Length: 226
Image (cartoon, rainbow, N blue to C red; front, side, top):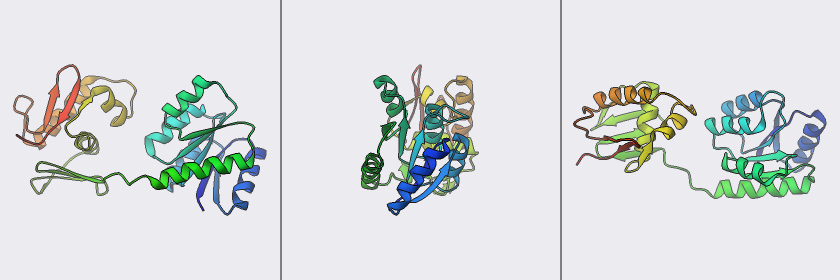
């Protein structure tokens, strides 16, 4: 049985969904706005979210984007929009599945069960990584260089962690803005300043890199020394 968060502003529909899911022994919480849903997911992540797109405070697609910024919880989108382009856009934005309204309780349960099976079958992503003498622990939010702890700001840690878990790959600046700064656009100088601070703490410079290598015009790559 699963812990399900139903995000639906229509009280009649919300009550019906809660009743159907509860009768099948699921634990159900509900929210009527996108912001309430974000609060619920942040405080105590459910096993799966049923997300209506027609919310009063935010468009559901924007709500999905915000949910994905704070959690990888499986999301089943419930939408009255059956346009294929829109559905593909939602799936690309992070939805795990979708239902077109109106749908039967049996259809909902079948989709939720399939999403939960896939989610439970995934192996948990690594929470620590080691690159040369650099070790990053996401759970503890700590980083060590040759066994010595690094004194990093929150943003410096997020930047280092993102690069470390993508070690060996060139990470585009646009991705850093999106994944580390949670911005769709911004000034490259912000990245450069934080990279400069990070390099100083790693004992390197842009002209003599050890771990952080700038690929001009593309992005940044983290590699072990040598």
